[in-house]
Image (cartoon, rainbow, N blue to C red):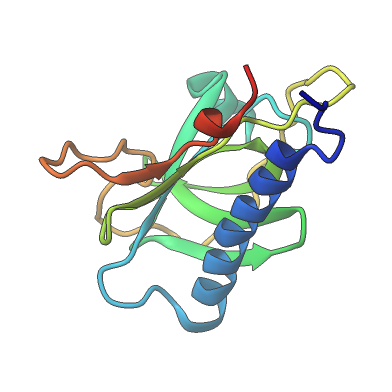
Length: 165
């Protein structure tokens, strides 16, 4: 069999990360429609991830953020997104490269994507940034909670089935 020099696995991953980017761009422009909300899991050690030392200590490898009721200053770039969230009622700014994302879920419609984190040549280091000013959080759910168990299974797209073993 011919070697895949096109790297379709990487092309597909990139295209699916574009789905996440476009969904966030729509939220930036119009807000979250209806009951839509997002759980985004990412590698906290990935180069370019910016989180405070306090959050990095609490989530040394991976964390899941919830974009639902309490998030501010969402900014979308070609390679990353930035958002301000509340962690234990303390505002924090996060910078999350799209290549660090491991999972995306919109439980309102049971749509989910799983990704392999893009490997980089340089060694990942803790990238932290001091807290930036954010709007104070009100009473509400912790934006770092895990998705609630649901009797319905989300539609998760995994590219492993299409990879050459």
